[in-house]
Amino acid sequence: MKAFLMYKDRDFDLQRRLPLNKQALTQDLGLDTLFNAMSLGDKFLFEVAEKAVLTGLNDDLGTILYRQLILKDCLKNSSIVRNIYDIAIESIESKKKSWGYFSKYLPAVLSGSIEVLQILVDMLKKLKHIADEHDDKFESEGFAAFFTMLKKELSDEYFASVQNHLIELKFPNGVLINAELGKGNKGTNYILRKSQEKKRSWIKRIFTKPPGYTFYISDRDEIGAKALSELHDRGINLVANALAQSADHIVSFFTMLRIELAFYVGCLNLHERLAQKGEPISFPTPIAPSERRHSFNGLYDVCLALSMEQRVVGNDVNADNKDLIIITGANQGGKTTFLRSIGLAQLMMQCGMFVPAESFSSNVCEGIFTHYKREEDTTMKSGKLDEELNRMSNIVDGITPNSMLLFNESFAATNEREGSEIARQITIALLERHIKVFFVTHLYEFAHGFYDKKMENVIFLRAERQSDGKRTFKLIEGEPLQTSYGKDLYNRIFGNTC
Image (cartoon, rainbow, N blue to C red):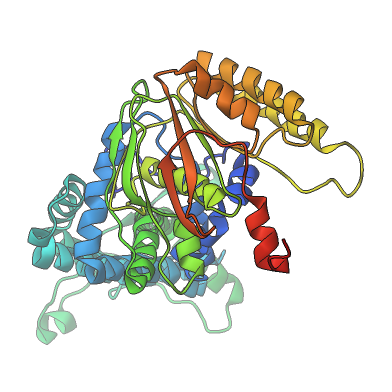
């Protein structure tokens, strides 16, 4: 049995390696805040959320849409989905509770396996009941296939057959074993047989002799008792192993079901947090990687929203058919927050989640990279510009066409002219490799140099500032300005001394 709730035709690989830039993405985009909101302190949910978000679907539009429809079903039927998830956890835990299952003593292995299988069968019955009662409430292809599989595999005849086998394997009438005599009259070819004992009247039981020979072992005959025990173990060896493997098979199904549902449970947890704050969410429209689409309404930084009591400001931008988006404007005007919202929404879309926006559409990217400014190296092993260029070199080694790179005030560790020239050359090289670039910068020469070229594939956004110096935290289209209005911050902190 397979759940297939993350892919149509394969399991979700929880052991898949995370991208090499995992640490940079986590730090620059504040991903731990997102994962904590999805996991609510559950380490397993955190691990699944991290793996799913950071190993997104680079070019698989079909699977993105497949997961979106499943997630929509989850949002409409959250209590049912959580119930299925709890059943999976309970089933996995049942194996841990049976001490005999892990014993080296064969009768204990058999007894433990029967105990575990009985619990697992009861769990499967609960799943089957959910499928029978609630399948009409789900519309996605994924859940339709899941419930159809449960109904097909877990019929009433199946459960009746399993129950009969479990009763028989307790050997209420003793163990019937066939064996042959080998060399030196040693037993060989031990085979456990199905008991032929049938219910007979007490008269037949008294007057009918059993078709065989009977011998008894004295209570003090320890060697004889040991030999009989070994005969018993030889007979049940294959059955005990087969039963343990059967239990493992069912547990593996519940294990994968738990892994795949954990992603959706994490999404439910996040959705509930955002709904409590009144923040909007929407299901994005993913576009093929070769196209250039990026338009949205009300896009906000989900991690900022999770850490603030009041609602955060969203942005509306249409950057369709643009390869380069340059963001300039006033200090503390929301540029870095906007850049983070771009990266978070892209990652969330590409793993099949909803996004923090009223509407969102973007081409899927082969890879998502960040190059943010860092604090001064306290060890003094290198200067800031040297460190920035080394990180840029590492990005270049791993980036591929149709990727997206987010720059945040990069290459400002040197003077304006040199920083602008470095940024210009790197950006041109990236555009030639068909890489989408978002660049937050205070480098006027760099930004205005592109503005003067009037390139059709470049859009310029500016952090809005009102005439009185107030920041709206909105991004608007506008020509780069020479000032970042640092004087506003000076006056706000020290007072207007002019």
